[in-house]
Image 1 (tube, rainbow, N blue to C red):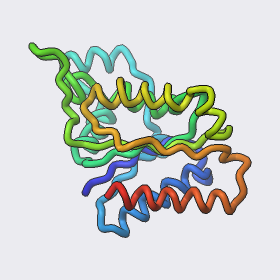
Image 2 (image 1 turned 135 degrees about the horizontal axis):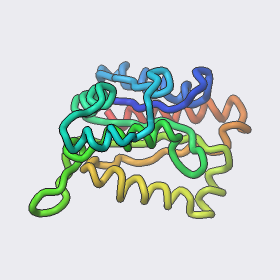
Image 3 (image 1 turned 180 degrees about the vertical axis):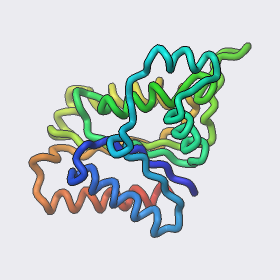
Length: 193
């Protein structure tokens, strides 16, 4: 199975990086092919420009966008790994979706309405939180974020959502708790593949 991992954290020593490593190592141990798109390391430009917009309608895409679309075409499963910043993905990850999930590639509008072009692929998210999962859940943040991603972003393109995994209080938990979280990540990788 082909797994594409879209990773969004600027610190190469972050706990998010440890999550990325645990997830991809577990997939590779099961014999899966894995491609990692570390958006910060790639210098991915998240800004959807006027040139990008006109390029989509004219069939002219930036080379960086075309390359990412090829990775998405290759993938059976797409995982987004990122920290929660201001109740959403980091700007670089949202910009990835804005620029790469273009009309004509991820979706289009035909005679019968919306046509989803990424069907047959699955998607999941792994997100770290600064506060407790209970506080985010109590305030309906988790439900709102899931609904936004599932019902609009992922469903619009036809992706089957496998789920969302959240790890709370990451800055303040113990090393032992982080090790347990990484075990959860490995189990998640094994359940996906």
